Length: 153
Image 1 (cartoon, rainbow, N blue to C red):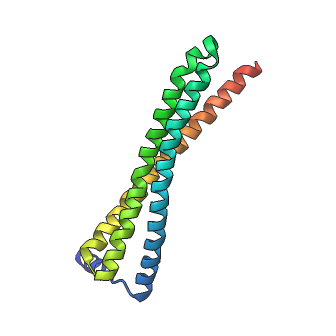
Image 2 (tube, rainbow, N blue to C red):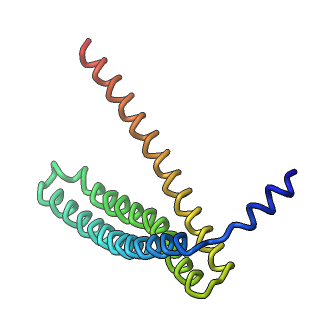
Image 3 (cartoon, rainbow, N blue to C red):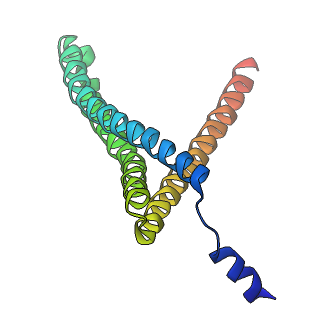
């Protein structure tokens, strides 16, 4: 019974409509990948400059700002770290697009499989980041509720 299901699965074909949909999806994925690379580069540059600006601003405050001088370095590291973290999903998306376009143009099954592997990696990465973000938001809400409850007493 299982061999029949497996053979049916492997007999799937990409027809003209499916090919057109994948071709359009690959174009949009390539566009989003390139825009993501630009976003990551700008975010990293912003982080470097924001850290410098914050350090200079805290230095100009004199002794009162002395304790915050390390904050500029922290902000720079945070922004650059986030830019690096965001780079990988865009890389997976861009690779999906390029390999999909190659697969459709050359009718290459291996490139099609690699393309879908990159799509899977992209979706997994974004899914994990989403779960982490939701957990962080839930934690912030819980901390906010606890903080509000303690100040109301």
